[in-house]
Image (tube, rainbow, N blue to C red):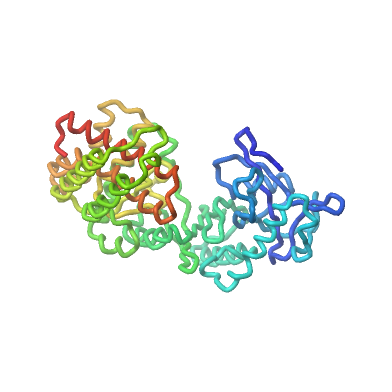
Length: 462
């Protein structure tokens, strides 16, 4: 059995299947068989690395399908498997031979997990065959349908596929692929049920503020998918220039101002409710979780919370939310994952990507998230941070009084952190929260405690 590699790479067993799902590529050793294995970098995109490595090691191009979890694998080293489709299936192979999956038996595989993975793949196709809209990328030949749809969608825009493509994410529910065309590259993104809100929200934002969202060429609701032109220009993640960050902050403000009158549209499109009213409703249950959880499960470093501490943090959060609501700033679109990799500078301005964490709420929340990234990327001094803040506030001065923002800024850091933590808690409890998740949430609560204590020390009214 392969052990976990110590060089930042991990082993995967690869199920290379034919487009019809009937045959599989196996290596033979006498009367025994095994599936190919590759090593890919740990913590990087699995599909992209598997496609590249299989192409190099096996000499055949493939499309990634989805991970396979064989019965009995658990956390065993070497227990990771991924299905891929040969694209196209080739009979001229440098290694291995094609075998009918139905002809295989467990006795032919010294590594029983290999056969268990093949069995799991085959079994997974059968009960879901009648549900293409639920699992749009389940069948091994799905890529042909996608390529056809993309080609048809491009035709009305005087574009055509030129052959090369890169697959980044792969599952039976979602997909992310970049296609080269005779013009700008295009991206197909399809989201699974867990991120289903991203599909209608992205389409709504493309209508509301097309200059701030990559241009969408087509959409396919049954796949929860859309086809967008690649954002050109420079990614903010590549910049430590404070002036570019200031420009991005101003563009964020303009995007939010555009969305002020679209609250109902954004809510209907699935934007998370991070309004002050919505967050106050979450606060009681969020902090109750920490007072009711076993004390030894709250942190990994031995620190626990006393009941009065949790009550004190909760009251500080509620005070901040009340202060923000009293100021009367409008609810706008927000982005909870506003990291620099999701912001591109184009000739026309900034575009903002990946709206899975889009929300409706106080505009300063998004600014606080961007501010944290600014501090890490630029290491600003007091003057640089002041200019960054002013760049964001300047577009707002035509909409709300400067005093409104002045009164809100002191309450925003704690409220924004709570909004992030409460959303993470709400999402994770739906999936069953594990110990690592509890510890992470506890670290956020400790940070809330530090912010609240620091604000009181500085005389800030919470």
